[in-house]
Amino acid sequence: EVQLVESGGGLVQPGRSLRLSCAASGFTFDDYAMHWVRQAPGKGLEWVSGISWNSGSIGYADSVKGRFTISRDNAKNSLYLQMNSLRAEDMALYYCAKGQMDYGDYAFDYWGQGTLVTVSS
Amino acid sequence: EIVLTQSPGTLSLSPGERATLSCRASQSVSSSYLAWYQQKPGQAPRLLIYGASSRATGIPDRFSGSGSGTDFTLTISRLEPEDFAVYYCQQYGSSSWTFGQGTKVEIK
Image (cartoon, rainbow over all chains, first blue to last red):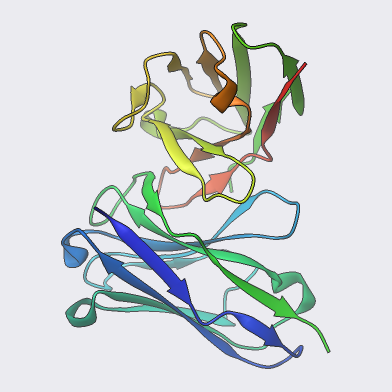
């Protein structure tokens, strides 16, 4: 059974940093691309960032480019999101999602339950 | 960036009725790289349809997707009580991913 478990969310002041983690199990982690998608309270889904199986291809939404960094550790079956210079508009539930393929164009076939990031002074 | 516009914003229907949800793209979606997700309150999204018309694993056949280019449709042939939820379309061409704003299917 595929499982994706996010952690690392919490309350953080504007301008500070936070690192999210996603622990994956139930599939061969290094065979698939992985992504972060966020959802602000009461709002829709927003793609944040994605990384190919070997970290060779990485992409970011314009809203986080230059502030967020995605990475993965295939030996630990883990995905990460380093979030710097956090803003109020970054407050959201952050989901880890598995791509259907290792790289390229694909949908997200499994999602975690999310970790909540609250940005407030 | 491709912008996806979903309509209607809310669909009020009764169990057993047919639901038709629309997703329109601001430019052509390459190779029909269009997916649909279902999200229930307090839950993560679930993949229903990918490649515009292929059902994901375990998805009942009352869910079907169609369309190409800039116009796509998700149809639920007969609504079951568990189908009342928010539905999002997503395009994933050229290694970029964007979502529509969602359509809520509510019980009439």
